Length: 251
Image (tube, rainbow, N blue to C red):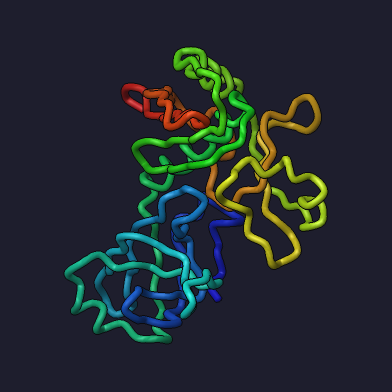
């Protein structure tokens, strides 16, 4: 099992960790600040600094899988190519310092929070999502047209209002009693511990902007998102509208 430190603190940039396992898929640590690909959000990159010297570049981070291909509670750090010598020097039990590419992660956090604001502006089920450092997209299950400029202005207003974001949790039973909290049609929130992590933007009641289960990393306040714009709206099918977000100039 890998302790996922980013769940409690998305701003944590590095940690010391112990190597648990090394195989053809990558490196498993006992704890990490690296977010694995999931929920539409790209996996982190960064470096593992070896106690004996040298930095092993991590190109991607993925969830572990068992022999049947099911997700496990391990997080796999995927080395970049061409690092055979450093990999050969690493063994289970070694201590490393894991450090994420913070600039890249912060862009992912900003975009991820922006997609939650988009869910508020377009209150329709989501049937596809991709969050990268350079763009983000949501596919909405709907037939009505969307206005690119209106959505851009709406996002700017929500960002400028500086709404706080709160990480919380609800029980599985509470989620079962409120299925509408799950906005995604294709990705279900992880279960198994009895509680489900939630993200709330704004206060409760009428002051609430968005509230939904989510395991991704986010900024603490919408003002931190900065200038994002809707770059494209596409009709992907008769029942699907794709909204693509990008950075405004100098974002």
